[in-house]
Length: 390
Ligand code: CTP
Image 1 (tube, protein in one colour):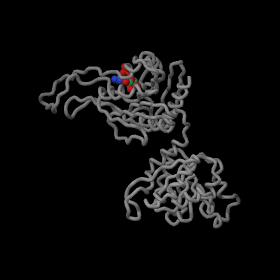
Image 2 (cartoon, rainbow, N blue to C red):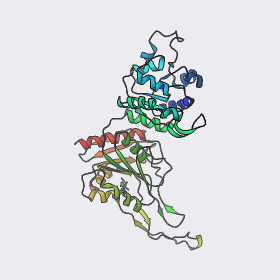
Image 3 (cartoon, helix red, strand yellow):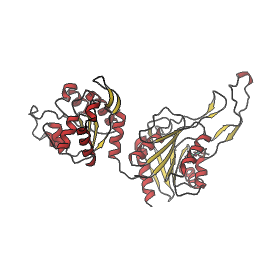
Image 4 (tube, rainbow, N blue to C red):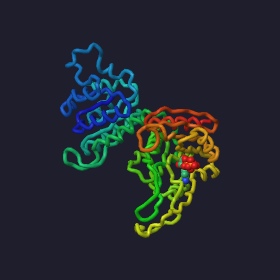
């Protein structure tokens, strides 16, 4: 359920609704009458494809009790934007309209994203209400600093949509990795040939970033080490940006001691140019042959480094997929390997989806059908959490 209250930021709730739907959620909207001054309930009805709860006395066509019916079977509720008024009413147990009545009947996790003037937000009474609700297990997505609708600059802007969606995902995830430090690598590496040319591959980093987000959602402390990518690191993970395989190796080795789980999702380049020219090589003077040398195999080295850590590797294969993967699992001394058959449509580099097979040390083989990378990440981490229990 998405609760919307009467802040100018109410229009941003439309974007939040769409993003939650993109993540696979079915969303019902409950709003205050004041919110309906900013955005019409009709807009939420059209986008959510569910009746909108906002004025039960006007809506005489229903036979059920709207504010109770909307809470039935909910997995989660999020109020965004939440005004000082709605937060105060909830903290005091006041239910004088459709939204606040529904909130008192909730039995699911609740996420609140406040939005208000900075002085209102700092008000000790508002802060006391927020503190009290936090103690009851409500999760807050703190408002951001910046220019406010009233012209002031301060903390009060509704948090970014992505931040709110991430908190919702986190509230819905099992806390199966709480307190576990997970190191994840992602993206390609770039091995320079000269000042402007390099050897690389088409990895976008999406699989590794999805893993970082899913691990964070499960309560892990995440260290994400990525090669060059266009992606924004998920909120709440510590991010290290590198370029070459050698830099990635150094960053991984620096942090590996802290990690209970290492997931090497990066497409580390296997080769680099044996000579690197500092300047740009002119066409006329280019060598006909580019001599290559192997990069350091980070995963292999980790597998040989003593330490009580769970090691997960990735493999991109085109033939003898399972056989090759099994061999890699053994050779690199891994606990689990995730294999991409990159000949399958929708799998592998640069897509939003992936279809992988997961093999573990015990010999178990799990085939995952084509699904979103966020779902693949969730399934991989469920397996990791299970292996940690063993
Ligand atoms: N990997 C690594 N360091 C490298 C190369 C790869 O840590 N220099 C890791 C990748 O992050 C991935 C796994 O090893 O987790 C996959 O390696 P891959 O390149 O598929 O296997 P190779 O052993 O290089 O085998 P081949 O290329 O012959 O298939």
